[in-house]
Image 1 (cartoon, rainbow, N blue to C red):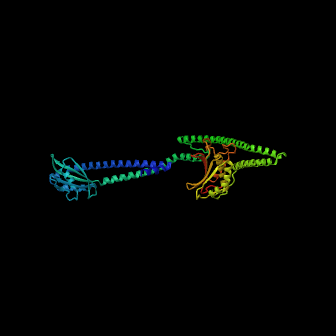
Image 2 (image 1 turned 60 degrees about the vertical axis):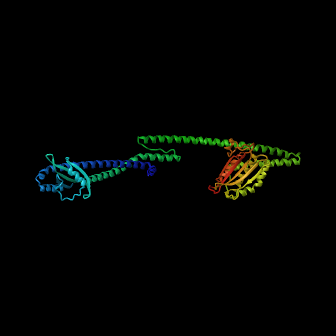
Length: 487
């Protein structure tokens, strides 16, 4: 219960928390004050009734000495009748020293016997006993006063005073206190609403301004004119926002300058890579062309040199295509693709590539019942070819390359290409998919960057790592459900 209340309180806004706190304090204060007042009223009223009743009974006892001595019972009955006219007098009884009733015996008393017995044997100036009367349905003070003549007890006067009026007065006071408490609570709520509005208004302004700033608008300012702590906070907040605005502008300028430098650095690296990749083939092509145009060169040599020109031209074309594919990938044409079938259909091409790299053993480990994925067949094939070529180059002469497919977590279809080469060193692990990064003597360093672009354009993921048994592996994950837009 307490946890629920705490959870409820924590979920309230600051204004409601303050209002509830004010009201809670007022209610607790009112309840405590009401209990204290009720106890004090009850104690004071009862004490007053006992004191007044005792005085009245003692006066009646003194006035009954002569009638008792003269056995003037009619006078005693007259005393009884006169007193019974009072609103708070329940009964009046005169008894002699033997406990026989002298007057007031015709009253329906229903007083507990213990109360009567203690009153008759009492010799103190006054004995006050309180009990609940079933006949009157209320509390009654039974006051017994002995009639003493020459230190001898001649009788007893017992007067019962009902406490109904006292309780009615107490309840009336409680009602007034509750009404006053309700008015206090209502006034407290009104004051709490006003105070919380005064307190939370600048807080609301702070929150609104912070939201605006979080959205990027650092020109936002808080206008709080109060000279208190909120005013100081607003001034500090405005200075902070101004400082952030200046810092943002400087950061933007720095970022633009850095981006420009990165562009120039990338362009310079690309130019160097392209120049390096083109320079050697162009030299070979130029030398071969000179041999061909020389009329003294035998035909067989010309044919062999012509093949050199074709091979070097293919290398140049491959370099140019790598750069074009990385800089401007084409739009995807998504169709259902069976990766197992795609790999089987391309096996001949990959085996030829593996044969060119050396005696590489190519093994297919394809999972049965592999679901289709929506993908661009040509782009996926290009990515696979790049990864297989890298694996064949890493495996070197006489190595092995495994192409494995499997389903992962029921949401992905994976293709993993593994080799038994030297693996990837720690320095290259974090940079392997970055453009222009390569550990080979020749090449643009764009192969795996293109692979990453292709896989991520299908909302997939690509990872690389070393195998425990040696070598490296590249894993491409393709989602079973296409969630992103084509690009």
